Image (cartoon, rainbow, N blue to C red; front, side, top):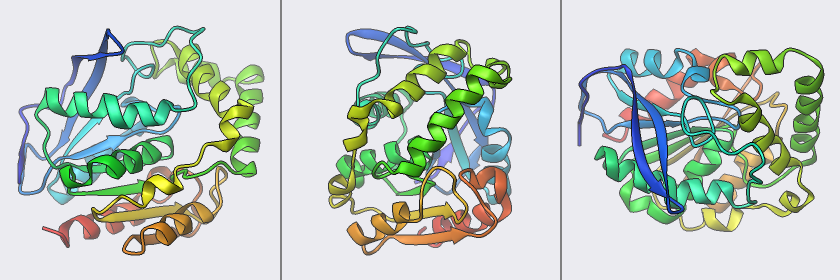
Amino acid sequence: MGSDISNSSVQFTDIQWRNSQLRLEYQWVGAKRSEFPVIVFLHEGLGSIALWKDFPETFCRTNGFTGLVFSRYGYGHSTPRPTDEKWPVSFMHEQAYQVLPALFSHLGIMRPWLFGHSDGASIALLYASRFSQQLSGVIVAAPHIFVEDITIDSIRAVREVYLTQDLRTKLGRHHADFDSAFWGWNNIWLDPAFGAWNIEQELTTITCPILAIQGEDDEYGTLEQIYGIQRKIPAAQIVVLTQCGHSPHRDQPDALSREVAHFITDRI
């Protein structure tokens, strides 16, 4: 199934969730028409449309793909979360099982590819665990499938940076409510209850194609994250990128683009 888009400006759509209405910002990128299904980009824990920078547009346009980028609830210029709202341990499950299906239905997206980074990668895997038959496949970069000490240590360090340096100012350029975006993410990851979070069992139900990519110098997780995916899904392909940290689309964009483009085009 191919894809067809009309423009690449940032737009907004409203979806119903938890008996309330959410306003989500989204943007079509890349080719206006493509023989490939839409690629949906799912951002990291402090990400947004803007924080992807030009990677989705450049990647999609170079390879003839159509992409959809959006900011999750609480991020970018989507509906902010109340600053005092405590995120549940299941926040990624909620995004995968409730918000994404509503968004796809509203925008008429069928059998997309999911391209997730960090928390967005975990959300992509969770969506695939329940809706594999509705996907063309999943690409995950720097995914989390269980909690590691290195992850918690790095997130705790980011908290200190946020409190003492200019990270608040930087995030303020990309989020309507940067305190809500930061503290919601940071507080739940550092909550002792989150230490037991683990989605390895959910992976066993995934049947669509999977490509898992991670940098060998990832400061937020060891390579056990992608090796763990392959143990649960033997058909999954994994790639380790050298001289690369937690953000392959920033550290090694050419290598990441090459691996992902080959994976998708080989399956048309």
